[in-house]
Amino acid sequence: MISRSEVIKMIMKKTTSDHLVLSTTGMISREVFSHDDRQENFYMIGSMGLASSFGLGIAKSNPDKKIIILDGDGSFLMNLGAAACIGFYNTSNIVHIILDNFSYESTGSQNSISNKIDLCNIAKSSGYKFVDEIINFDINKISFDKKELSFYRIHVGIESNEEISRVAHTPEEITSNFKLIL
Ligand SMILES: Cc1ncc(C[n+]2csc(CCOP(=O)(O)OP(=O)(O)O)c2C)c(N)n1
Image (cartoon, rainbow, N blue to C red; front, side, top):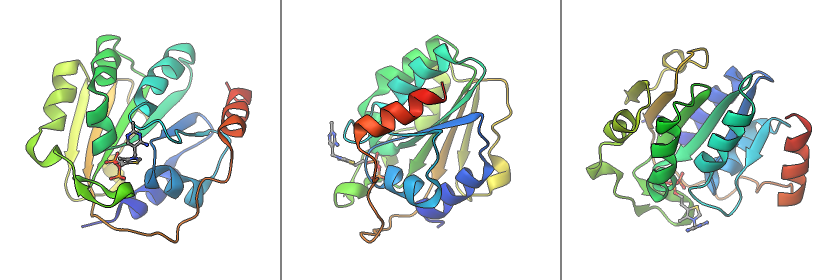
């Protein structure tokens, strides 16, 4: 199975300056930072589950930008209320991507419960308009151009890469840099 890091690399390559990338806590943010640190990235250091809540606010206040939320399965499941609100408000400029490795890889690869939960059904019933489950990853299956609220559940392998650097910016720097492009 493709690694989370490879998927992140390909997703980041597809982004332009109109795409704001909000990444969840742990290795997902570290990989985004290592592959493609940009001013248009917001790394949600520490606050697991809240990239989606933050994404909802940013999307509503910046309708001309596309908000790409890179979530883990653990992070998504931690804050299902945000998914319900994103769907309820039909936030058409959000692309919500779940990098599902069925585990909390960042903290030691403990099993999450995503193998027993239909994440796509949660998205559909919350009101996401385009929902896709991707088992065999191909970057061409991902679109940032749809004019509707989109959700992708991408199956990725469990891998541990302790070597990967930590996000070098402080939370204050992340916030002030990000504010400059809003
Ligand atoms: C509220 C809260 N609980 C726990 C943690 C510790 N923590 C950081 S990342 C992480 C695992 C995230 O899992 P997932 O979103 O599935 O991403 P993965 O690491 O598997 O890519 C955990 C438990 C935290 N930062 N905040």
